[in-house]
Image (tube, rainbow, N blue to C red):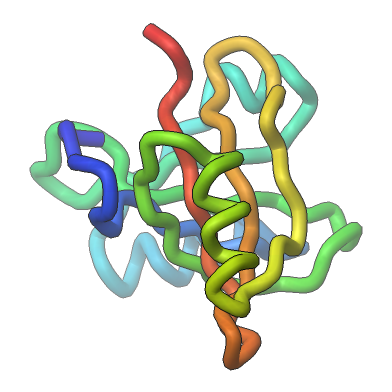
Length: 129
């Protein structure tokens, strides 16, 4: 990932019970490559970073749900403070679906939110350097 600033669209994720199939589909369609995410894999999660052909770094990921969550595609906005953003979203009529404020070493803090119309999106802050 490059160095986006807070408030920018900075990541996307496709969650599926068939990550191999998603990798084949999106890789063939857009010439994307995939690589296991080290911190996620060490925690037992099937998470594959997506990189566009010629890009310097990943731009999104495929999350293998193992059938434990419904499939979805979601975009993430970079924020300075996940907890504060969740509170602001609730004040503005949105809702917090889930917060992950201590996801483990090397992993970003993140939350899933819904806007007042019910649309799901994510916010995240990168892991501390």
